[in-house]
Length: 351
Image (cartoon, rainbow, N blue to C red; front, side, top):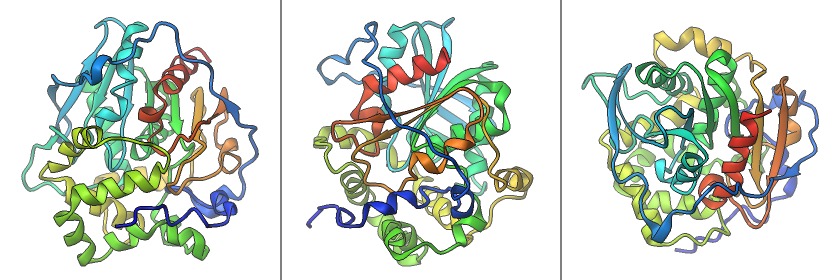
């Protein structure tokens, strides 16, 4: 199969369209920001030697409806940092980040999201819900279970949306935030609004997942499908099979397919959420501003749908900076440019 990114020839103006879930009507009202290159890597950080897995030993804890599998590294009395991955990735997106933050004195918590790795829904009859509010409530439940009152929060893809929601709805729990691709809070109403054809093309997998053929196809070819997304989203990242396979093992979670399909169908209004999240979703549909000190980041070779910084700058009303990471960095910025991500977390903490 030819895995060349089919979006390379799309006009660059498409990047001014909505990204993962920002509404077009809202984005049109946002102001400008001048991107800045990331600072040099922290001198206290040490690379993971020999490809060793810093997450070889995970902990588990009951938190809300989940038993969460998570990594916990660094000093127990260190300032907490929570790192959230996205789809189709897992905690190993932070394999080069977490040890460096731990070396800088942070306690680093990296959970598997619902539907990934060792995280499980405790009730066999629970809805396999992937809506945005559910994932954010999961994060708050994890913080409560770990007795973490406040933390620096950081993420990309689904994880960026999750930390956006934490900062918007529970700002007292967030010391600072790092968000790859900026402001990603959305709504079903926004997801139903049609985009220009070039932008719709970027969401081909969302429409595929809207069909039963798409569900069956993803279930039958989860690893192959995910590797294709990795290549399209990060066209200049020369990851090897071992790197991919280490993360892909997390997709064998029994709830993974159901939660992924629900996530994308919910965005289009093709699947219902749960009543317990209705009030939160109403608040999120208003695209609330974020006052938590924030650094947003973007790779210069991100092949996944994402908004331009100019589209979301005014959503951050507190201390704020944006960084463009150059050198062919794609969608999985923490794994492709770990030093830049580490520096952003440390700098956000001191904004």
